[in-house]
Image (tube, rainbow, N blue to C red; front, top):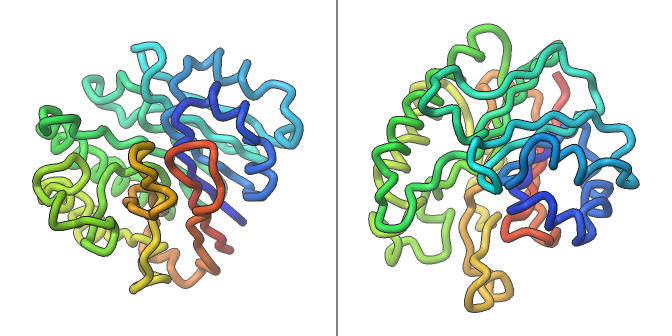
Length: 258
């Protein structure tokens, strides 16, 4: 089975940029999308009738604020159930989590809150990280979990091009955010699947639109496949698809057989 994640930075915009060709290239059974920036009806309208998407069921979770955040799942395999949010009202107004349960595993796509300029949203982010870890651990107690998405953090210095210049200054690379992911991986018994398989490799999944960052490969690895540790023996491969464009993020895939 192949799973994919992609922060599309606006679904209605990306469908005009060879989106269907990219989806066909990914050839994923289940795809988690983040930052759809669309209400549920707009997601369905944007994807309706697109060539190459005929075999996918579409589920989405939108923010109360229009044109902001939002997640979606495209799946060829019918899920047992689909749920939005993590069950905490103050954290569930932005459409950041969508969960599909399948026979053998839980699939969660997440768009983790950005700490924002001046780190003004860092307190909210810290509260989110604690609650989201608890949420994943509760799912993991019932069956294995694959959590994919834009986690809005570079976990290690190798995960961004300029770690020293950004440490504790830039959203996505503060010690609090790093600790949030470390807690999930260490205490929650999850693994960063791509890093497990590519321990020393430098690869990024997000590049600023400014200054030719993508052409210069001045990027960050913000997009992850985080899985229950017990899935590791069943993972066949995981890949960052840096050549697929259309967004400031690129897709990440995970192949496994449970």
